[in-house]
Length: 386
Image 1 (cartoon, rainbow, N blue to C red):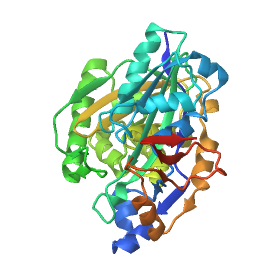
Image 2 (tube, rainbow, N blue to C red):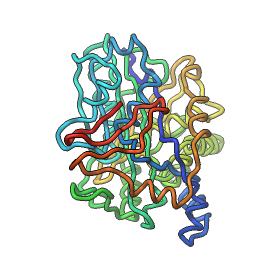
Image 3 (cartoon, rainbow, N blue to C red):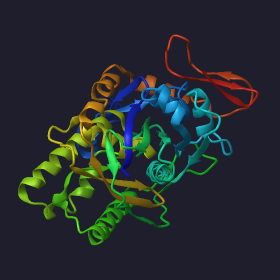
């Protein structure tokens, strides 16, 4: 039985901040951001967007009537949860018009949870071949204004449908994974911004990738030459290159250039959006299959997923016949191109306008002219969506 990703789509809010503009405002050289970090823009999250709205708006792009009939599980991966009890998947189920006879669950493990969601969906479809699973990875990366992590903020969502006989990518069931208790990044319940040790996080990311790559080769007997490209978790795009550089000399000369070119293809969307946490590696995957000029059906891609704290997984997928026809290239590029570029002052105002507290009634900047699902504010301690 072939199981994998049948459809995928991305969503990010309509506002973006140019990082060259941010660099000047912070007294930094623009190249520190655009070259050193590898980012051009980052998504700016208005207070009428959260992980639910972004995940639902991504999923709406791919759901059909037939999908709604076959989906009986919604897996929502996030580390930006809106409730300590009720899962974001419950809201998504209702807003997407899915059957009430469904399982709805939220997963958390830093940036890794989206991958675990896909692995669980894979196992479920194996046991229920006539069913489909909706996996949503949605997050908002917040570090604070004028902090060292500010340049690696961002936000958005990836929605994926896992099914039998997928149109895009098939899972190869060759995962290797590991976990290690590391204090490189965490977000206590009493904070809205994360605590991060950037240097340690980079070191652990690289170490885990190298360790899992060696284990993967031992388990599968595959080499670097077996892959057309890699999709990496990209909190910033330079991170993927740091990982790949550790093993690139294992590839043959021509293959080496191809892998580096496809690494650049995998970075293009992330350069414009920033960090998606749980969705980051799958934005990288979407960028790779959207922007590479040489991928062919039957070729294999490697995927490295990392979540601080720390947990990582390395696995591969196989490109399916006619997969190009089902990649939402134009839709994704149009979404990114049509965003409104904000000033630094506007970005700071939006950053500080988030409605984190449920006490009393409050209203966001949502308005009825938008065609997207929005968070309208708090009423009687409940979040209101429409």
